[in-house]
Image 1 (tube, helix red, strand yellow):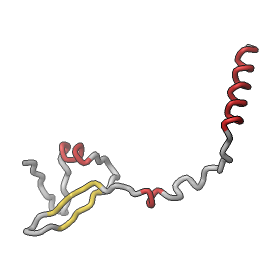
Image 2 (cartoon, rainbow, N blue to C red):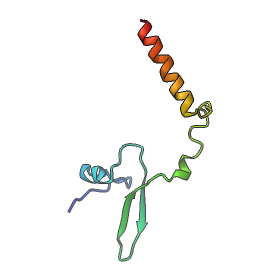
Image 3 (tube, rainbow, N blue to C red):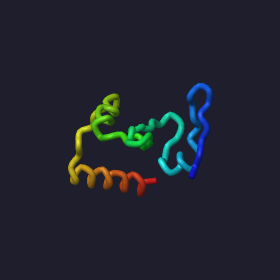
Image 4 (cartoon, rainbow, N blue to C red):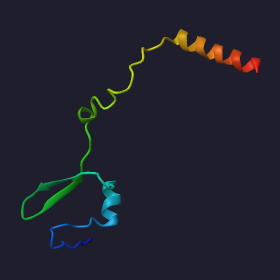
Length: 84
């Protein structure tokens, strides 16, 4: 059993073993689910793909390239290397 003390401000330091088990670090969020008989389930908040949508909007969109274009780029690089 792992025990932690509640401060006068209602704060609790999560013990290291629990932080490691939940794979959480500073600024991560945890979820509290109320269960029966005065028990609480604590889990790490996992980001769904939906919450990540739009995260890279600031990045410039790049047109996809074909296999032929990739092959041509590789050949160009090989030519440049052999010239040196």
